[in-house]
Length: 173
Image 1 (spheres, helix red, strand yellow):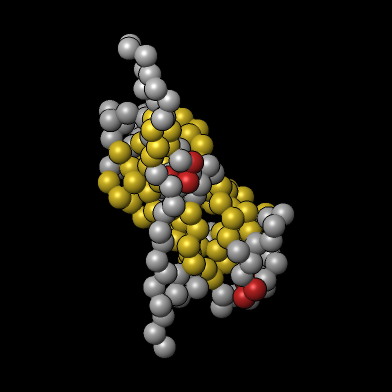
Image 2 (cartoon, rainbow, N blue to C red):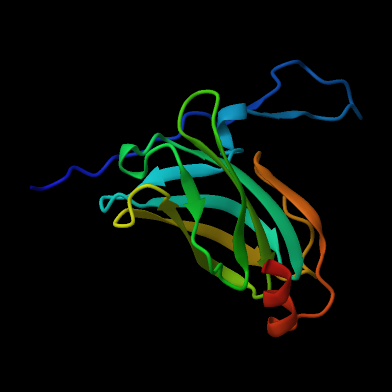
């Protein structure tokens, strides 16, 4: 069965103040609020897994990322993270969301510059055959290239000074 691709047209733009200005007065540019995607985006994938876009982050920093997944009936009510997290991304909390679904809190340590995709798994505590993969997609910039504007749902916890994969893995356990 063919699936139709969704097209996303962004509404918004830039408008300039139409008030006449006296000589020496400053001009103002107003940006429409809809121009910027300011929240973490959760997108269901065709295979039942999820893609979570968290925007721009800075290398060698630790972030808390909070997002809501829609209700996933196959997982049931009792959901837990996979027992062995990856070295950079781990789930720290899973709670029922007020609006339905699951509120997921993750901790993400950025180590490399570039477009990165890390994965975590959600497991059903009642059905061993069910799991859902969540891919977290981030654009990580070098720590010397300024400070990114974080999306709603992303909070910088602080810098990571030196990277040691064995020491880092011990922190997750």
